[in-house]
Image 1 (cartoon, rainbow, N blue to C red):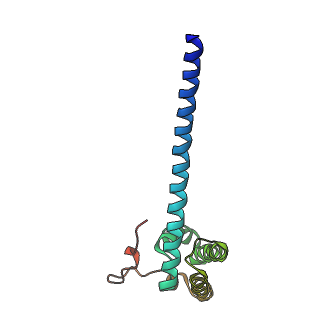
Image 2: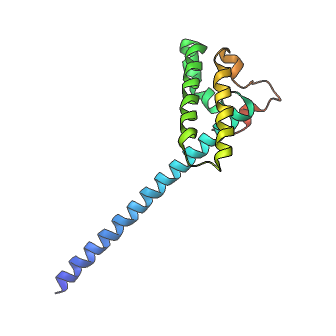
Length: 138
């Protein structure tokens, strides 16, 4: 009888440990998803307010620019913006439909404006006093 109780206690303890690990894993997934959404919103707001490539995107595209010139870097950020437009077209995580329409209009406008411009014309300036590289960190 004591043996059966010890086995049941061990199984219960193992089950509780498994549930705690599952909970921690799910919380980490929620944290990553939340920070991804937050970054996407920051980038969309930056584009909508300035009409320029977000500093985070510039950092990620700089190695392409150094290898292949501005054309590939510009193509990469335009593709990324196109995907962002698709995301905001279908997501339910916006305040209301008016906000969605306004944001999509601004993002589409930036997409069209970036096409004829050179890389240096669509990235924030590093000149002192512009503040662009310091709007948000990451």
